[in-house]
Length: 376
Length: 87
Image 1 (spheres, rainbow over the protein chains, first blue to last red):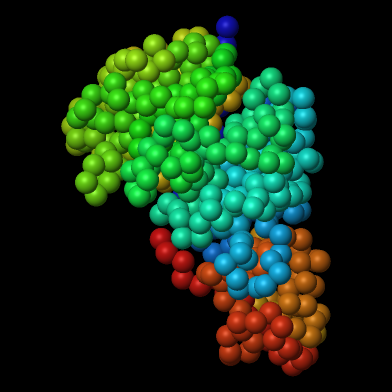
Image 2: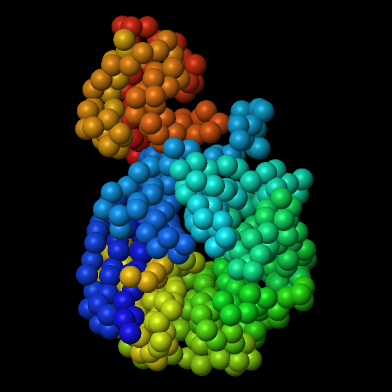
């Protein structure tokens, strides 16, 4: 059976698509696509297998969304990209403008054409026409608690983010979002209202280290075969929450102390609900955000976070200082599972044996922001 | 008609043309005219709160325009530039 995969790669300077042969041994490259554009996310619609959406901006120009239905050969721009409603008073703190779209999420399988986008500053947007026009989701963007959850002075070096959207595969009304200023939020009515979901999650940069909201949720992922299980790589550690529970468990405490449990991203196994991978980074002292000790590695748990094993075969054994950003670590759906990570130094690494060994399949790309694996 | 200079960052919208004419008696109306002919151009220059984007610059003749309401006559030239924006 073919395990061919395409990797949709967004970088600080454009997008690339890498396509494998049936054994994932050799790769062809298409790109650069929109050279010089800042591409935060490039995503294939799994519902039709052909529509690509790209979140793009440039150093000068405002943010937009591009759409392709021919494998990235030609692109059309959104007629109405994500934008906040016009504020009553121009210049007021509430006069938000989208700086960039960060995350693109295809809607529920039962809603073809629906897409969601998360932006900086934090905003939730919805398209019902395949990404051509986008509307502000008032249930979050105009929520009475918005400015508490997303304070104007909060944020990452690239600005505060609504960095992730996850939809319950069993129920299109049930959604989770992750933000860099408020942590995780849940909606039971397709975004019409939201509640914080952060019990037990540390925010060690706040006066109350376990606040109701205020955490920096770097990444959340639902276990594909057990959607009541949420994995979270947070600014302050690795967590797991099994619903209907409300309190997260800090499963990262089982990581080796010299490595810690700071990182940007976590990847669940598509078939094994107890298995996930992280790529730790150095979050000590001044927060270098590099591979700890200059020794890159992924760590895998196969028991829902009770224990972790180091997987570093093929990675530099010393003086390797890259890291992996939020959207730049992913899995395909083949067996054995393929894992892919895009590094800040422009390398794409892959494993075709579930993390047992790693090799580069691309080098010298610009700083990589996102890697998405999709079937060919 | 107002003479308009289009910077390289926006010529993908104008079929490569960097000098053209547009109608309008203010910066905003000139941008509206351009956007009607080249859909999407205006939002790349001006945000949803009608602020000129941080790394874009608009000049009326030799003077920097900070306000989209700045008036124009047919003798004026509008220059749009991409400003310095980092590496």
